[in-house]
Length: 112
Length: 114
View 1 (cartoon, rainbow over the protein chains, first blue to last red):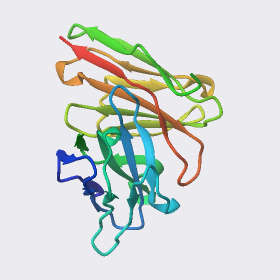
View 2 (cartoon, one colour):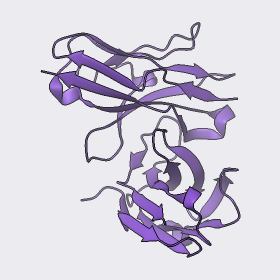
View 3 (tube, helix red, strand yellow):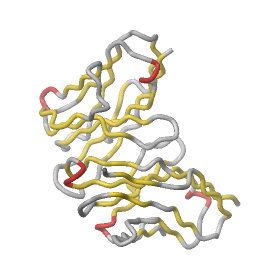
View 4 (cartoon, one colour):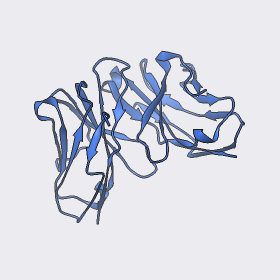
């Protein structure tokens, strides 16, 4: 079965500390992986996707097919990074691209 | 605001009543999705439309749920005979077709069944 696992419900760090939000997935083929973010009182929005290989707001994520992981990293956390982060996948086996399967989410709290 | 809009933002209803939610996608988008999110969980896929055709429905979508997208524009999600377990945030998203296109989400309709 296709599944996304985010093992941490809450990640609490101080400003300037490195951040790694973990995401593991279960998928038989080649999925597309995404990170979505939801800031307080805002809608869910795309942060980045593995196919783009880009850094957004200082965040990067590398797809590791051997470990079936797509961890989100940032070297120096900022207070404005505090939000709910969701890892998601899509692919042909999950019913087609753009149908997203989400993890349960990790709340990142960055303290001053 | 030219993004995805949902109405109402909040709905409180008594158990057994019917409710209907509306989603207006971004106008150029031909794909429209409904998701449901309960407390402490990520969004779960319910159904999606390509233009006016409903192409997939999740097993989560019982026969009390029905969705339409007449003319391939706005969509409605109706829940009949609501149950307390239907209490959740209902999210709508839209996108262009094809791979890797970004899904844009609405702000959701929070349903509380009392």
